[in-house]
Amino acid sequence: MASMASLGAACLGILTHCLGFFLTIPEAVYANATVSVEGVTSPLDPGSTPNANENPALLSPSNLLAVLRTVWRLAAFSLSYLIHIPKVVYLPIKHVTIAFIYVIEALLRPLYPILAPFYLAFRIFMTPILVPVLLLYRMAVLVYPLYVFLGAAVVCGAMAGLLARRLDGIIVKDVFGFRSQRLVTPSKRKRTSSREKRVRIKTK
Image 1 (cartoon, rainbow, N blue to C red):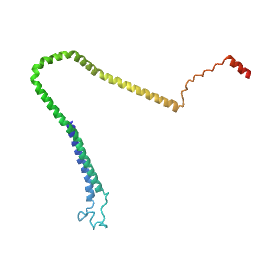
Image 2: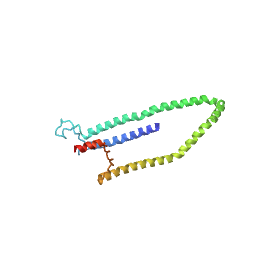
Image 3: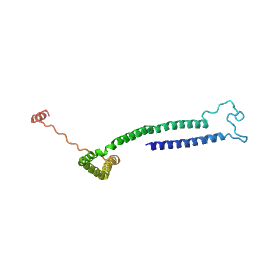
Image 4: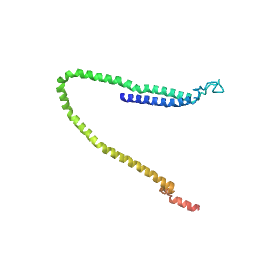
């Protein structure tokens, strides 16, 4: 992590120098554009311009380049601090962890010969538990490529089916103008009794 932070800082510094170099070239060209046969003449020289009391334009190329260069340097300066923040956080944690592990090892090193029987008994006791777990892990590693292949096949098949269904609906309904007719179940007739039939016949 520290190497990545230093590499990012170096790349940012190189980019800053390159951009500063390219920003200074147009400014130098613009400054050399006022060179005459007798020597360099300033834009504010009374003899070179008819209006000697006027200030130079604020939006001149040299001023714009100077502003851009200043903004870029400020941005690069602030980003350089942001890049070093992970290093500042990581290095103390790393050194504290290394020191803690070293202290623990120094304290437990004289106890290794005394604790050797307990360590061996612990390994023997954990063998029935660790061996099946290790076998399952090895099987998972072996089956993982098959799982990835079948999963990708299922996803691709589902996407192809949905796309084919969508295209079929667009082609059949929009292009050819066919529409699927829904089967409409005939409505149930209302049953009439014999008395109602007689009443209807009499009224007619």
